[in-house]
Length: 373
Image 1 (cartoon, rainbow, N blue to C red):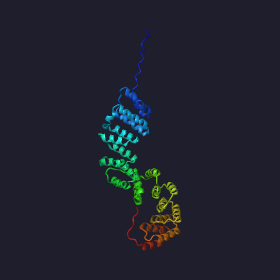
Image 2 (image 1 turned 120 degrees about the horizontal axis):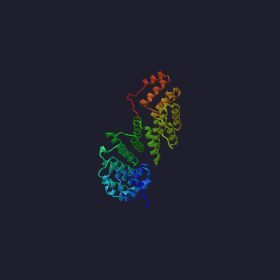
Image 3 (image 1 turned 135 degrees about the vertical axis):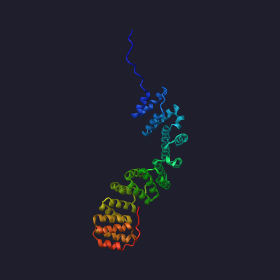
């Protein structure tokens, strides 16, 4: 009679632990593949585990795997429980939008018992991605002021700007600024800039850049604007100029020059953006080179380009060029503003012509200083 096998029996592996390990290691195909086995064994995973798996699938752009997870939810009775499982329902909302099924997303959203800010933001982003501006607006207005975060506002501003409702986008930006507890980021300014470009509100665009410089988001704004710019089907001269100006103010004159050279059409603002950019960054010779190029192209200078050129002359003590620009502004500007007069005085002072500077100051007729954006 054979001796009984006294070796310890191997326990069957814990399927739930195996499933969690697969998820943690990012082995999504195997994790999703184990769901039918778990169901056959009568093992019911909790809602959070399934939500995390669905989230991983969507982040990995594995929509096919996400659909299999959703099927598992239906087969195991989670479908009816979704309205009470906020975290899981949020991921299913994401899946519906990935599959371009906004009606299903809206139906689930309406049935949810507890919605959080992420729920609303998923709906906003989903409708925005599908170009459903009015639907996104309706969701946004259903939110209470305290439930809206910067993502909610940014999504609406960008959605309205891209959808052609640019004035509404600017109004939303103003509303966001008035909202308490909302801290702006570079995406906030990026959406506003897109609206300014479409509305041709150059002054507002310049003010926006000024705010961004103060806050310190300009480099990120340029990246975001560049992506948006590359996706625009129609790029007019103002669109190009706004981005050139942004790069120049950021100090990235290489990128500004590259875009400037690629422009199919240039206007006064385009040239001025480069001249001011070079002058502000201490590249006075380049600034004057561009100023001469603008005149050669037959583009009339304005107050900003002339004042920048005068600053460049002052920086390199070029009295001869300064006098030529002085003569030019006398011919072209009947009523120069305070900035131009100040630049002219500074140029003569730095070139050692104090008497000329005093004479100009004594004969200056303006009394009220102008302001610039």
